[in-house]
Image (cartoon, rainbow, N blue to C red; front, top):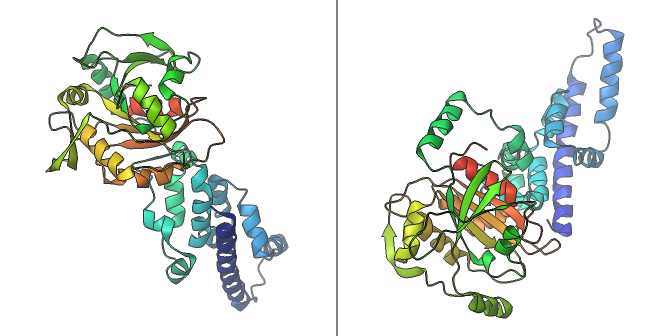
Amino acid sequence: MAVNERGGWESVVIESLRSFRDRYLQSVRNVSRSDHLMKRSNDEASATESHLERLPIDLHLYIMSFLSPQDLCRLSCTSHYWNSTVHDPLLWRYFLLRDIPLWSSVNHNSLPDLEVLTKTSSELLENANHDYMSQYLKSCPECRRYGKPNRPVYGAVTSFLHSLVVNTEPRFAMFGPGLEQLDVSLLTKMMYSPEVLPVAGLPQRQINGIGSGISFMFKNQQKLNIITLYSAVRKERERARTEQNNIQNPAFLQGDERATENCTRRYTVIPLVENVCNVVDGFIYVANAESNRSHERENEFEQIQAMLCQPYATSNRPLLVLSCISRAGVNKIPSIYMAHQLHLNKLSFPWLVQDTEAETLIGLLDGIEWLLRESGMNV
């Protein structure tokens, strides 16, 4: 959130809280004070609460800005006043816009509507009935981890039976411009970072014309095989990266729109790539999240559809989007905005956008863990 935009939202939130407090205190004054059965200790506690509630509204906002979502929810349980204050929709809209750039991931269940992010303050003041608190708690990665339900018994049994009938080394197809456009090669870093993701060798299973991919060991407990699909040979990729040109990927064939059960496709893939799409257990899309260059998100979305929407493949396979930058300090596109730019809300498959740094591989293991879980692996 820009500094001037943040200041504007702070003013709107403070005015909203001040208006509520004035109404609340007026209602308290109108309550009858003839109840002589109150104990003195309760009177003193009430007076203490009154002093806290009479602090300046901007100080309330300042204090609440340091509290976690869980702490704010606990604060709302202390009194009627704080319950109403904490539930102020503009307050949570402010928190939502403030924290979105800091969130490292978003998935198909937690993506906030684009309308929530684009409404102006005047539009919100006219209609402040949207439940931004619920939206925040649903979208915040910390809250998603905190509220993650325990795995049911039948889920563990299903996973065990699944492991008996499927290969215990799932295969994933990895593609996308982030593999080729960044100054630091994500795949090279993966191959030469045994402390993060050790290489487990080349398996014997081959896909005609593509090869076997590379096997990695995830946290010393689960093998996975990643088949990387580049758009061109290395020399051409290096030249395009230096000149900041986008390569026309020969794996995709443009034609008339085709409707399938899960999506409409404008692209199809060549037979060799189609073979990969039909046998893999999921997909890894490496998106260029650096904001200092132009992107073709509409085209990227259509190519994602072409890869995922294969008529003879298993449906509901997961998509992991690594929203990747070269290194720390590079201006990046937040994960939530990346999800909207790629129109992932239009997909009927489970997906996750995970912030990742190619140089340090920060975020990579979190994304792979989600991908393995969604593929039925018990990790």
